[in-house]
Image 1: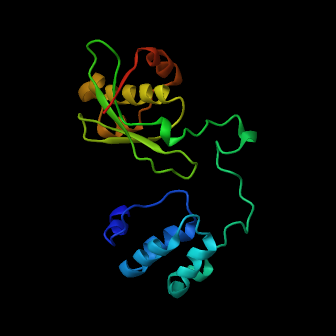
Image 2 (image 1 turned 90 degrees about the horizontal axis):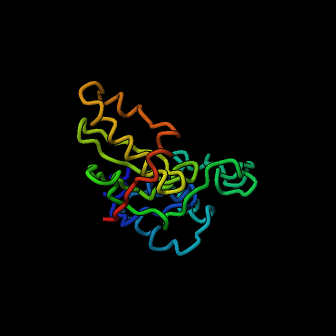
Length: 191
């Protein structure tokens, strides 16, 4: 989907904007979407983006629900009353890094796409050389804990060898106890 939007000449996809903004990106042709982006300014409202979709009723824009019509709960991590949920980690605290378990241990790369998901978390991911698979996982804090988990996921394929296939590796996730045991020996090096 990103390639479809970028093919229209969109330089970047803004995050945390209204649903109608994303619909503009998808439904408008190249000229319309570039004009929308040029005209939107800072803090453009959902209603403003809806006016830009007015000519696209044949695609269902007329039936778009208005934001705020239904009371929706705040996403996890964004409401102090939801204290039991995993906190959302600000993007400024996350940067891609080489991760290792210390002396003699191989280094792996862990990346972040900085695209917030439905629950307000961005995703971290690592590539597996054994199977060519990529594990995407919503981030959780603290960052060091997340990096330890991704490292353990990556090492599982190498440690299991031929006994684990790609599907088994993607389904694997280390236990909290394994992550906590590995966390103190994790070394991070930004790249």
